[in-house]
Image 1: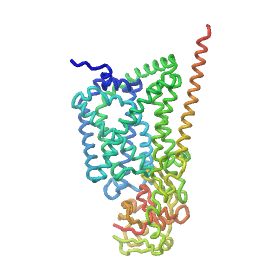
Image 2 (image 1 turned 90 degrees about the vertical axis):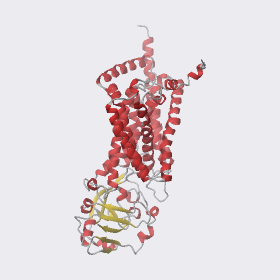
Image 3 (image 1 turned 180 degrees about the horizontal axis):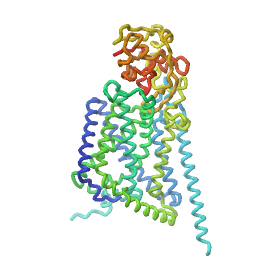
Length: 155
Length: 402
């Protein structure tokens, strides 16, 4: 995406939204400062900044690196289903982390995290995603091969 | 003049931006994902506000929760959690499309640009914070030292405020890339991309394919979690921390009797339910005396802020009957319900006037015809319509009429 002039906002609509929005932000910050004390506030700051750093400095660069690798390693003909499967897998893994980790498990409450097999479930869900991607990839390859064969035949 | 080695010039942010560029990272993709996130965040914000009001029924005046419709909170809280989960893939995709912009050069063009970029810090950090803490809370995972509800609520305001700034900054560009002319152009581009892709035997996802994959991801995370509140989908709820049919007497529990340290007090022969406050004849009743009173049944759901819900038929004594028996005025009273629990934020809960008045507001003694399990609040618990589960106080021992 090329940086364009439109990257710099302007106009009365922007300034009205900015004033109003920053007012709401200030209200939220005020609420945190009056309701959280010392260690709790520090802990909030750690999670708040930590999420941003984890995304911008770790996850996003890894994805960029992964995409470069993907473009080199995976043949163009099956790249689409592989990318699709990666996107869906990422989402499933993100959502499953707290239950697979079972960090909140309590011995006195068996109805919380009632299954012992969240890891297996994640593996199963990912298997379904990648099997679907494989079926799509095979169908694409066949279609391409057929198209090439038809194109190669003398008229 | 100093000559910069060619390798070093490649380290300029513009080059980083170019290296990370992809035709999928168009303004249009960013705008479409942004619109979807705008809708989901606004939904989360409004349902979250509603939950906040429901948790403080006596401190919000006319905004206090009504007792009817009985299933309102079940729907709004279910939507809150499901929308939050659906936002996770949307946010990851959105941040991916705009990531190269982080390295825009020059980093700041003018005051407005600086303000817009600075507002991205609370927007992005806050969004990640809300989705992460919300998701962790569902599974009772608390790797932090603050109160989840307090931090989640106030950070919600920060994110919505930053979102208003962001929308103001992106109004013009969004209109220009999503308007009718842009739509026609995108369709033409899309067609040529598809043709080119077919000709070159496919070079990966095109814009539409990318959005479709994100859509599938949203559907996948929703289908595998929403069964915690939508009962017919419970068998698909692979990653939900609860299932509405698993728990003592077929109903999940948020806090067990052992966890709340009430086992001895709840099983003791000394147990009494007392009714005091603005009444003329204070009461002190055993569980047997409660069972001897007129019993009433109500089909109500326990709705947890954590997004699970489960219905059951509860039976017991109407709160309004108890207040009347004690010589109070059940039509113009509020009440505080107190538990046997010693230390807990949720040891007590408030009933506003509509809830005291409602005929389905019970001190329940039985669930689906069986005496309450200890984990469901034996000897007696509060059950009322349209109320967060944490305020359906268990192990009730005292009713203070006010």
